[in-house]
Image (cartoon, rainbow, N blue to C red):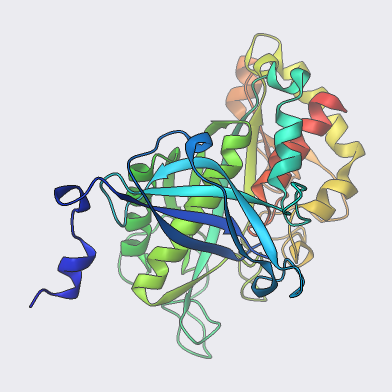
Length: 354
């Protein structure tokens, strides 16, 4: 009798041309990731060649029971690191049967902004630093922490090595490789300041793809922690008190910022961000006020600030950018639970179209 793992790891291409496509979408809370699978007659590499599908929106908080059908539009394809072979993951967004985006579909508006000629001509690049916390299953407390108690104070854990410092590295490394396999532009990982907290970076990625790739990277992390028997939290302040929160810093540049004289373009863009500070904060994640306190490498939520190499500012300009007179800047305000479609498109809209 075959072991269950043998069946899970079956290579379908030995027996059939058919593939499995896992359709992924965002549920009603704006942070819950949903997915379901379907069989297709053969390999597909173009999302426009994939069939639309539907789901019961009344079970995801996205439709009423008497009119519950929501339609999935395939938007981006990734290789499936779990099923391997020609099997795929499909990032989708959601519409009514009449073709209107449902309220929780943030990708639709982002795609309109990124397709604007003035935005497209600037070729916006993003590098998103996604922080997260690994939590004990059934207990809202980070892994490696004594239940109801605390580890030693922060200091040894950031980029730390050792069983008492790097807690959950096997999950992190599995996720790193799964992202690379899937075709996500993951550029690195590291242990964060609070024990049990980690970060992965996606980028540089252009335009709407940044949102697609961060969402699928989150999906992969949810699946890997599911297998590992732990939970992942994107809460911006999972443990109150003298512990670092979790953000999703957004590094950003345009073509003119990357060219000679770009530093002046960066400064003008930062001025535009300052004028719309409140609007951006309102869209940068739930519970961010618990994180943006002016402590633990954050700026106060009510005050906009920027500086060179200043991790206590709202926006940081790197030393290399200042030295070379061109490059990128980092918006440090987004929370770990932000919607990357919203944040990336909003930054482009404010700095290019504003």
